[in-house]
Amino acid sequence: SYSISLCTSQNVGAGNVNSIGDFKGHSSKLVSRSDIIAMGVIWGVAACGGPPIPFRYGRKDALKAGRSGVPEPQQDLASHIESFRLQGFTQKEMIALVACGHTLGGVRSVDFQDIVPDPSNASIATFDTTSGFDHLIVTQYLNSSTKNPLIRVPSGNSTFASDLRIFGSHRNATMKGLNSETSFSQTCTTLLAKMIDTVPSNVHLSDVVTLLPVKVSSAQITAIDSQLVFMADLRVTFPIDINPMAVSKVRMLWCDSRGQFKNCNRVTNIASIPFLDAADTSPLTDSFNIQFALYRFKVQISASRSVSKFWFEIDGVVHNNGSNDYLIGQDEIIFVPSLGSVDVKFPQPDPANPSQFLPRTSEGNPISAAIHALDFTGGQNIVPPVLDSVFPLTRNASQVVAEGYSYWQSPAIVDKGSILTVDLEATIKGVLYSADNLGTGHLGPDESIFSFPFSIATNITKF
Image (cartoon, rainbow, N blue to C red; front, side, top):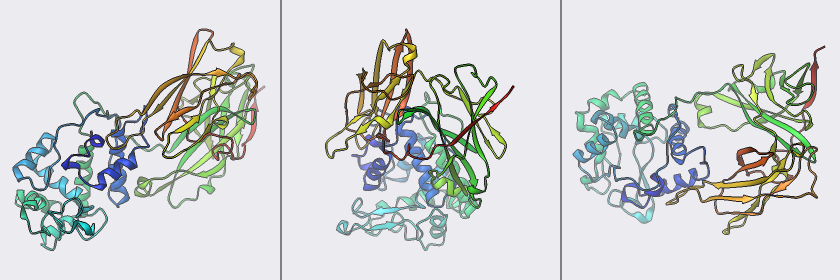
């Protein structure tokens, strides 16, 4: 309920509003805003030099503001202890968690002029003298050199000295136990993970997410320039001091799904010399001293053969999804973003024509075809989705875009958000086919996502 509780005194401040603004464009029907906010905690700590915090997914978003429960600086110690108890924390954990949170940031005069006077100055009184994640918040408290505004209140009003009351509430024993880089880091890792993993009893989080050494993404069959194309990206993890160019051979292999060579009967297809691109990184990659390389494959295929499954080899080492291979679920309907378009207008909503949609003509015309448009853009006091509508698709018989497929398209979709996704479905000869959670961030023929070179395609033939 964080994003719909920003008007309350417990969530005052531009920092909260700005954070929700940063997070608003990343949720979807598969990823909750709550999971994005939890990941924001993890990234924020790592970006400031702190330890990597384990991440679990599966949080559910609240549809209304929850009860008040965030401690406020003017409250007494008993109120603080009770607030943390209701969230599942002991008094000792409360002390440590406040120290973990207050190693970063400070108090803004605009938000708390009773603590830091002169709100017109927009100054920030920081909790310690460094900007990074470290145990100096503890050291400076114990040696009395601290300028923490919740200990030495600039306004002189000791009612707001909440850190002083909390830190000293265990006769400084807990704080003394935190006064080393190792103990502070280990304790904060545990407590911050507990904080973001505290969920209602009917919510069950996943196991801890671990890094995949290789990860496949953007695998799709689509059409580019009237040619059917199979595309897939392979993200490979490298130590920070290793040049990805040192890898001499990266190949993608796949089986046909139709025809005489179906399921690699006598013929296995190979794509080599992928386009090497830089992959997105995060504060966590820096924390783990790793980097990513993105190997991008694009090959021409025919509708009469298509693709059933695929896998990769890196310098002879096979990566095949734990011997399960990577599967193409269906190719009866495909999404063609290169033929879509978007018209961005501010402050008016964006009309988009994302659904250039091709059912296979060999299976007969669809009895029905539709697009489900969804947008889970969040924001202050906004409960997603901001768009949840179904539109019919119509056939455009004059447009020929790929051998073996007919061409269907959507009407213009007006979206007030910024992360439009679509689900496509068509009923063909009584069978329902679907393609879900398709992004529309790259529409049009000139998008760079489609413009990298084709890979070299060959095959292995067994006689």
